[in-house]
Length: 397
Image (cartoon, rainbow, N blue to C red; front, side, top):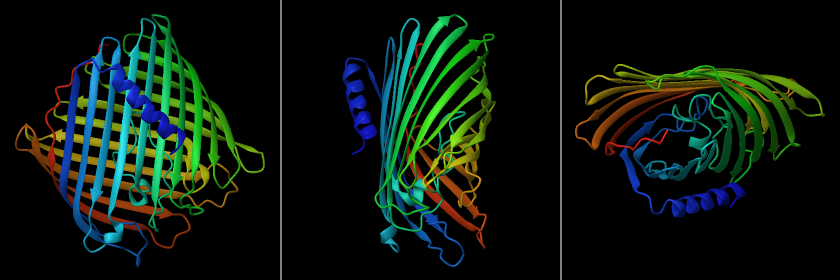
């Protein structure tokens, strides 16, 4: 068990113990259904494997609020069974932790994630992968041609100190550890990432802030020497009374490459999260730098879209799109640039307060620049969802 996994377990135990006297919310969600996919490993034409069978996805959020903060811990398990391809059956495990504490002028937050899953899912992320605005994920290689599993764990503490009503000091750090049961050069390689940042946030008015940051990172990839990086960025954020949020980000990062040289990589981002009548929109476009399980440090251009429309009080249209393009920071690398896109569209009908039916279609496409053929897959899911309406208590903002 790696260090970040142990730390995550310790923090979850301490958080539960500290909040033991507070009122707890138990927010379950269980999805059970049937899955079909005509190219499960996203192989090139001639090597496709189609699967179909039942799936179960269950999670339980444990959440509590105190006078000074909030704590939540969410374990999750996902299992599939394919009668005609039993070697592709899998049981995946996940856990998320979020611990927030507010003082008079100080705010501390710790977020943790853990995932142990089959590489079919880890190397082919769906439209929901990634975090909030500006927090697109990175690390997958798109190659899942062998039976293998990945364990990923991360911790991200952050700290802010209010200098005045209009200015805050920000400090942020992170550690991510990725390990595979077996390593395959150029496809599934172990790596760790450690990063730190310091910044100043200025409140321009009630809705707008401007943040400048200095960043440093170290990428430790199993098949190559450690690589250091440092850079700076500036970010403009807005937030309105109806919780519409937008951001713009620009920056640059200097990254060490093979041979002791360095390359300048540009950083950027823009996004919006907004409710418009019956519609909920999330759109995020970003450019980031980080290690890939292909064994190199890449720049990733990433688009994430999610749109939900309440057609009636009980029936909703769901649509999502995710696209990425990866290139090695090192211009003389043998890494082959990769483009990946996946999208889904579906309907969800809540026939009772706690029960709903969901039907969805998804399509995935992948291209490597030197490949003769692209890889595509189509899939469909029919599932029943149990999820009581969550009447979550608001934070003490």
